[in-house]
Length: 326
Image 1 (cartoon, helix red, strand yellow):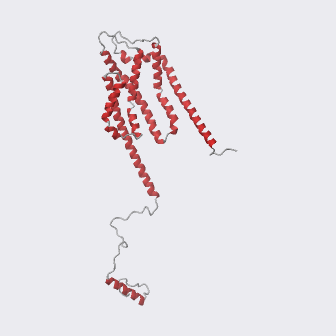
Image 2: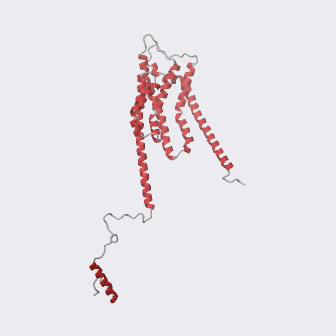
Image 3: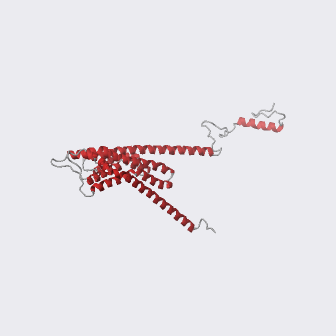
């Protein structure tokens, strides 16, 4: 005999099976993420030295003639390109990793949350890549050109490959995160933490905060600090504009839904509730009472007496104005 569906043991078993199913799915998603990074790493590792040479290009082109990069540690010529390729594999696998995260959490989201989360994931990934590209093609040449041009006389610029990799990774992360400012602004507005108007009033504080963040995350020079703070400010303005558009679109959608609901209620209302009110100025003869004058009262009494003495015959009704019938 089967147990009833409301049995606590049955409900407990169903919850346990659901939890195990989620854990198995999470394991599969994590395994796919790891395999994606491993495949990309194996494809890029044979070109590790060429990739490092490409990364060091903004510095080597500003080095004086006869200078080159050096490796202080014994294992650095092997470990540093290995580390670079591994990090590059993780960065290139970010879209697939985010897709696996999305596939795992999407079934538990509402429709409006799905409609918002997917564009934010895509835009955040693209903005992170844009920040890294901006750092490599714009910031690195200016920063390394400034550093090498200020070298004191008699000092040979010979940068260690490990120190250089740590330096550029720090800048990549700083600019990649800084370019996420529009996404952060939109999330703050969507979550109801603030409004576009409140953020606009705090614009001076945002500008000062951008320069402070640029001072903390970048090397101690004005060029890199400014090159990080100014894009953050511009991206804040972009996020503010997009959040205003989203709020305006949400308000228009709510107004359209309210109008649709009002029309639906008016169509389903009873007929007596849908009757239109009388226009102003229209009078009903029964709305007001006017007493009869003595002359009108006398004529009515005469008509009643005449009707009682001589009932009307045929189609001749009594004269309602007080006179006798002809």
